[in-house]
Length: 447
Image (cartoon, rainbow, N blue to C red; front, side):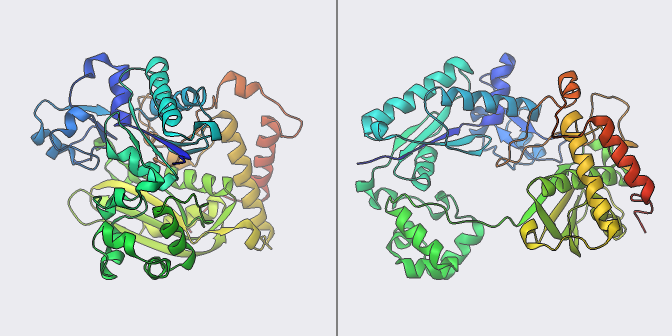
């Protein structure tokens, strides 16, 4: 009867934050969108809106037809990130958070004296009450209690909103048999197709498989064994994973659906992706661009690279790909860096030019981390800034499994910080100037 995992899932998170902060939106159907345009999609819907069938991914024009009184709310990512960190603090006042799974999900490992049903349920109720008291009554969560994370995630999804569900090891696998295959975290559309090809159409059939049979479906003896054991309540450590790509995408607001602004957005996305690449210490072997158009099929192209991680080389490659795109009205721009290799497995640059480009990118990263992303940028990014400084051509976006920092980059405090282990801002600027003067590192990028 041992429970090991408590998984918390915030309900309709973005919409709930808006309703908590804006009383006029409470008890109303609302849809949160990346930009206010009928051609974009909802990224969150309140439970009042979900009653009309509106959900994440519903086109705004369709959502308005489904619910006449729907309120469209433009997303405010920074507020969602700030609220996320407040929620983590509230939960940790009750029990340590072992893993932040996404901006609206987190896992807590139950201690030995919390693993009985009564004690675990008491802890779950304490967490719910703490969030309600410290963050707000319109931010509710569903909590799953189970022997492992996979089953706790199932339990958290079982009853929404504001659910509390317990799955015991002695109930397995019978407790799971009524669920569809897609209810299991890790079984998406592609994996479901692989299961169907193997003759596995239902959860009872899924649970009947041997580890060897599951290994054939997953193409991995290790994963087959892991899934078989987790379905029976065992607490199995995640097998090591390999990072495959880094990327960003952005829906363009109506006033920026033109080639010049789309190109500036593409450069900003690439700049962010390159900075992330260096932060995780990987090198990219492929760059891909994608543009979704308003009145035609999307366009996508990629190019193989000699493994690199400096922004200048990536921008040069992106420029060449950009020339191949169709001339139509762009709706969404995306950049992906893939075929990633860890720095441990990459030969360091032999040529002085490549080493200087890497040093230049590192110096730019440090300036941005201290003073904000806008402190240094390529000219074409800066040249398309809107006249209204409150607007940003690439507003913050949140990937659910990546929570951005909300440090005070650019503040007086950050600007005044010095460290003996880091260069001062003046030294960094001098270093960048020397790098740029020693060779034209950013000239002829389109060449």
